[in-house]
Length: 157
Image 1 (tube, rainbow, N blue to C red):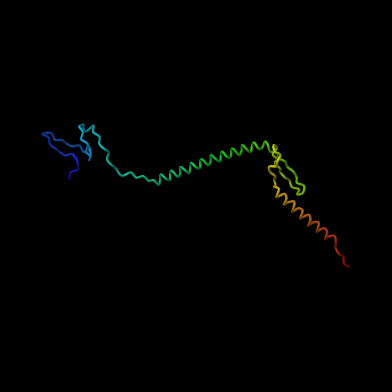
Image 2 (image 1 turned 30 degrees about the vertical axis):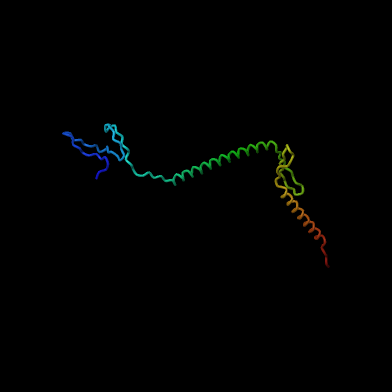
């Protein structure tokens, strides 16, 4: 079986030409007048290259997740810094006062903006103070009603 330009032994006079096993003509090759040391041979074809796209996709996905995490951390740090800056500037403007609310006898923390004069925060809040006033008033009325009925004790002989 003949495979294209496979080298063959051809005796020429007294000299026997021995073909080199590392130089083979390939199909579609071009004959040149170069010595065998200067010729260029195409590389032997090896196994097919296998590319696993799933691994690359997973790596890309992991990289994307890591990039998003870094971006989220950066934004959170920036938001914390801005919040701290706003808080520090507000601390210079806000006055804190402790006041005792007479109807409930509760200590109340009031934070007031010095520039505008408005109350920024009250601890406990207004709803809690109203609830305490209402419950104290109900308890006081119940005590008064109990005292009133306790005075009139009938004596039977």
